[in-house]
Length: 397
Image 1 (tube, rainbow, N blue to C red):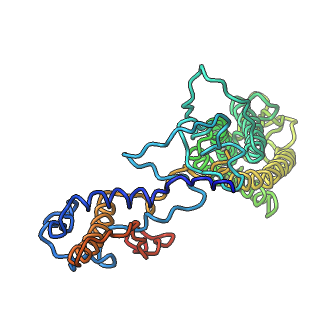
Image 2: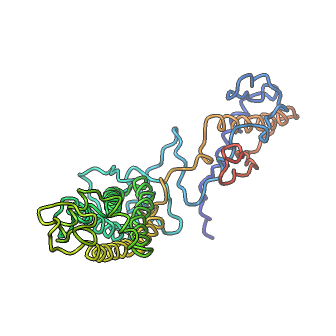
């Protein structure tokens, strides 16, 4: 008959044997309840004076750790080095972090911690890949950068009077041109901020980038609405009022030189005297060519503006859905404040446990004869974790 293999001693049996060895060297009358060194005036306090967990202001929710978080980093605890050689699981970013039972807390060797690289250059790193959310952000921001730069270049060349008949736009459509220039500048700044957030994996930059996309959307719609309203509703009447009230002598002269006309209806009606426009000039009036030019320019203007609206909405949607997923790690990877262990909570937990242990040791010590007290584990506090959206004390924020 083969001998049964001997089981290694468990932790509870080792602790019980150590307590038995200590108690055998003491007399029964010398067995005293231990004092509580954690809170002031705890040595002379009776056993019945156990602090109430419910009325305390300290957080006792430290026993609950979410499944997707790793172990709590305490100052006095160190992680035991594993003797098994092989790849260890990630505790932060990376594609494998989305697998089940994977930790979510960042470590010093994470490959994506808001753009901060803590790995030494001498260490070998695997080849990293962008996730699909980052590619969507890259494509959408590239499109925003392209049409923002094109619009900015077009507006600058219009202000510099490079295009044919650009001076007419500078005189007759100055408001629309100014708003379009501001929109193009905002688009360029927004795209640059987007590139910084995408390339650095910085969610703060991407949050500001998403907000600026809404501002850019408003500035895209503004010139489109103004030009559409001006062209659709009584354009001829608006041109008549602009020529007689708003343009002035200089503005009329510039339009006459560009369109090769003289006066509004004829050289005798609201004309500005120039080298080609005078009383005996045979040039036609400026109303008909100016009206045709404005109808053409305004139509193209709001067509381009409203054509960019769906593209801008798609860019906003992509930023809203993908900014927090630029890496596979959600948020900052930090333990929520409700689950952090502070010194007051630790003192209250240990004090409660010490009082319970003193109570039990006192009862066993007063009985006749020596009795080995059983091994007690730390009490499990029946305190529910604070709900989401509340502070450490259960109050709603």
